[in-house]
Image 1 (cartoon, helix red, strand yellow):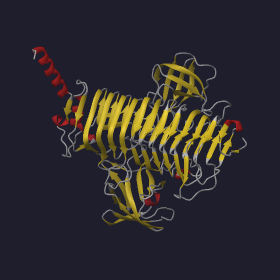
Image 2: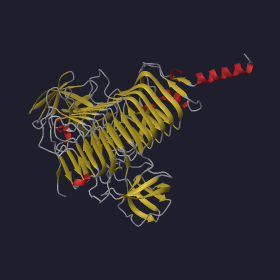
Image 3: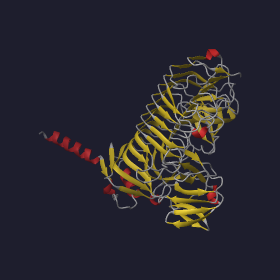
Image 4: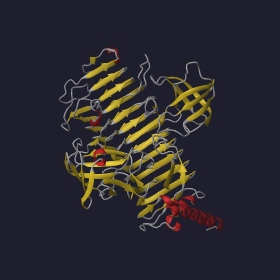
Length: 603
């Protein structure tokens, strides 16, 4: 072999070996229960000068404490108000900042976190892959107690071993590693049926508690209004979202593969102004064999102001106190027209503020709050953050006379395409998928099982949560929906297309081109689909099967249409329901083509 070729081969081999970074070289050993945070930070930093690095964890358990974790300030959408958590400082076990081309290879290891901290933060990163890992907490922020006996005068309950507590002056206090629960939010869960219903911790706060056996507590007081049955589990957490499960910030090309999120503090996996996210086989559910029922204090996955392609496939969501998936942007209010091309904008929801909602070159839409009508587009020239709540944007051209204070601005550039497929959604008191994005949406081959609210909600509003915007191309096909929306009675529609447009504008529709095709709806009640202000709605080839899961409510429309046009309803099978009720409001007969009879309501 020629010398030059031999040298080249040796160099390539050396480079190849250098790309694998074994965490043990940095003092991080499995199954020691020692704090791995500082050693892992060094291993991650070693990737900065080595392209295509893989951080390798030999299989085992690794523990992380916040004590040696770097603290950063992040303003994160939909988390906390100034009053709830003013500092916005967050620590994480894995912190990657301005890094590229890194794989975190867990080899099916278990990462256990202590205290209040996020699992990972990816900040201005690119081409990051996290795979073959489980994330859990030594003391999850959710407390769980199984009801053993209940009557108007007392409750006997078995506390889960992971739910640390003490009884102080007769009152049970939930505590963790350097935290206590102060602001209580409770959900009651039936493990046999999977039903989740809102409940209350108030009668327990007002009761007198004492331990009658290990992990068995008797609460004596007024429980006459507490609705629960033996065997059901009351799950209790602090309603303030001071932390998140994981955070992807201004990052690109992020992949998760075979990742188990067994518990997450706060809002779950949040991606904010990130691009091209691929989540394959991500399981937001309690660890098998743990006996716990809740995996997230709020959402499973939350996408705010993202773009590119978001793909969620082969995933499972079970045991969430809020929605499984939420995809949206943010509406900001026009407080002042400073100049012809300069606007002072304000974040309006208390939990969403402080982040850079626009950058130079972004296209924005100007719209009315009450009608959600976009009447003008423009392009951002520059952005200045005035304070945590207000932004000054300069546009490339002057706005027209149509704009007035009180109108809103949406970032059109940062809107993603979304694909959700081959996934299961279950055991949540809230919704399966919320989506408001103007780019292509495909929801196919999923199973939605006994979700407390709408399995799919397409909203858009500039008056409540201020989550934007319109959808323009949505396909919902080949999914199975089973006994969903029982917490939303009487508007317990399985799929709800419900933009918050208080004013209807003639010949303007908020949403368009929504196709609901070849799905199976297993429903215990009448409501199936509600749609408002939608142009080009197709409900075709769906099969509806009646169940006996719950008592049927008062007679309501199976399909409720309000101010829609170009609606097609055909080739659906309703089983024993030969003529389900289809009701039209603020519509004309010419707005719909249907092979079912319908009732036309007056405006």
